[in-house]
Length: 296
Image (cartoon, rainbow, N blue to C red; front, side, top):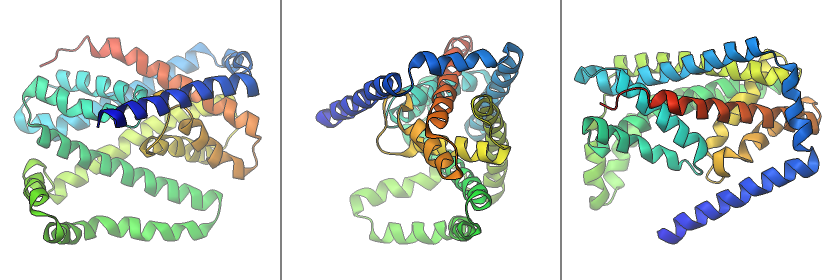
């Protein structure tokens, strides 16, 4: 297993270096960064505030899921969410996800399986909402035939209980014991899941609005196309391979979303790189803020 971890870091570092070098050769970092001079400080501060509001909402979602039933304070959940988000954004291959159950165990002595199960539920809701939005917007921008993909996506949640039952039947005994524990560590009542899903929708609408407006500073896009691009970029984080800090796949996802719409490749890459810089800088700013909140 140790060699697999080393290989991950080698691949991630290689991609990161290749992206840095490639941008310098293809565009020149000076040309990319000078585009920021067209962004006013007031606009940037406002959108950064909106991004931090989305971070606060994400912290409140974790608190609502884990902390409110236990009558915990909100403050430690803000700290956990900001640090977890930072590690997710900077570590490759979703390695940062592993920090969440460790933070929850450290602060509240939650069993690893409980916090991991809850995180999986939240990530499933995130993924479902983003895919619904991506398919809907893609149908407007590319072809209405894509809307057919919504049908299995909307039906899937209702089929999960049946799929879960079948999985338990065919799973080996060594795995079956662990699988049987998962439902006891997560609240999957319909009312609760619907509330968390609605909160998830609000979180993403706020975050994507801010990112879409930032992207529009660097490339003239209608709002729907800007949303299409930033959703694609966010979904790129689930890919099995990408560089440190999401380098490479973040930009490639925006390129794949906008290139078929007739925009110039160079213009797309410059805009994607600058949006990525914004995301990473705001993430860095969130770390000292996180440390201001108590751990437990």
